Length: 294
Image (tube, rainbow, N blue to C red; front, side, top):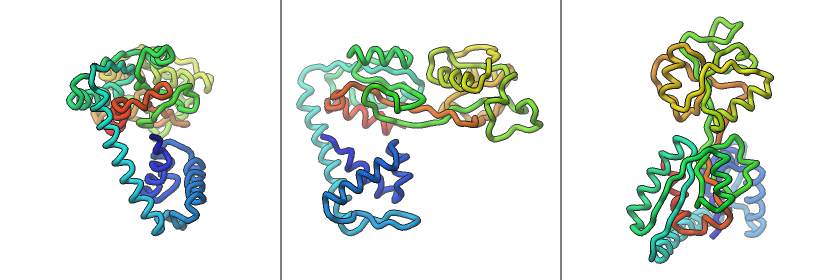
């Protein structure tokens, strides 16, 4: 039951702005514009009036929006009922995970599902991005919750759960060489002589940082490699070097700064799956819960 077009139109109605709606849906603005134009042509009427500030639903648009919401409610109820009917015998779901936030969301979503469906068995398998992708290709996983620097090159269907910035973490009082103050943004070329405390090799953050350093012709001085966030922050606050961590893992504790790189590093938290996997009602519900489990 493909309701993507309906979701696009509802997001436009919710944001009343094409650009913001596109950002929320993690698609291009042209994709939303084309979807709306095609639908309006099909219905032979305008669904939104457009001005400089916002897009306002017409009377026809209000009818469509009301019906669209009802259709999504019907879909949700139908999927839940089908899942109950299908759940006659135990089903096994193997979920690959490669990030802290992915694990947090998995725990919330799987806990809810196991309370609702008593005869399902859910296993979490931790691995890095490449390992999870290989297991998915071999059909050894139901789906994977992982992070990547770009969704454009993913070889399998996917759903974006979140986009966040990878921040430079520096101790209080630190500033790039050549400056007497600490700016809000730091150019990569200003880090050529800095000691770096980096995440473990093959992690998404490490891969992204290594790629950026190489692009800016920087041979990093690696002070240490750590996979634990608390240890990384402790070493940074003690002045042992600077590091990189996803924004969602940073706290407001004293002892360090959180700075943006220029250009910024952005990573996506995604669910990747094989074609048709999301047609399983329980998997579909699982993905909905992962989206809302913040």
